[in-house]
Length: 271
Image 1 (cartoon, rainbow, N blue to C red):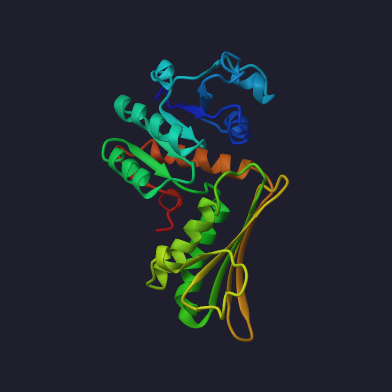
Image 2 (tube, rainbow, N blue to C red):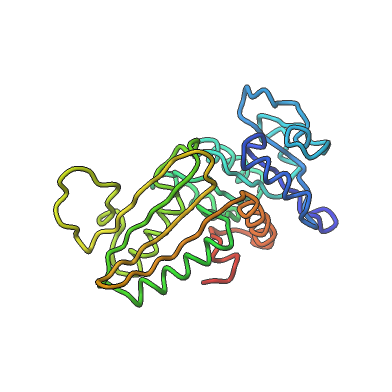
């Protein structure tokens, strides 16, 4: 760290989340963006990260290779895609840099690679950095524990038309929390959409419904439906700033960790 200032690198700096992170850094005391990355061949390579984000010149040119700026940051925030994130992780592992990963859509094998890297560096892996969403995670555990097997569980999520994975990582994590609380395995009880003559619903299943439309930032509802009543736990995001602020909060927290794999429940003290 430089004089107590946390130096942050942002992957995917020209994307929707990257630009939001750049703006959030401007408002976060003690945090400064000192490196920015974009995919190879991007038209933004060499352009000042602040200028492309519309927040003014930062003196931080966008680069395409993380190794070029490995000495310029303490923590990498990555909300890109599984392949690039894992490539960045290897460089961070080699150079001893910490990571905050908001990328979703990892396979089981890719998650194992992240767990292995966390034995050498500190990593926060969270499908959603929003404080509100992570509070919902805790509420889901409580609700599932109280309502038990007497309700049907359905998870409905909606995102913008550009999102490439479905269901969202947040929705999957919600399903995992409910399943674990009820003593089930999500891989064995999840039902992803329904069509045609499906027969009567099996109460032991957890249903997922996905919406992709327009510019929806992110909406999630978990429905616990019983006979005569239902409980719904919902979160609606109207700005990506919630995720960006959560990522910066996570960055400040993980800066004090020498190694290990964590999530936002650790950051927020909800364990």
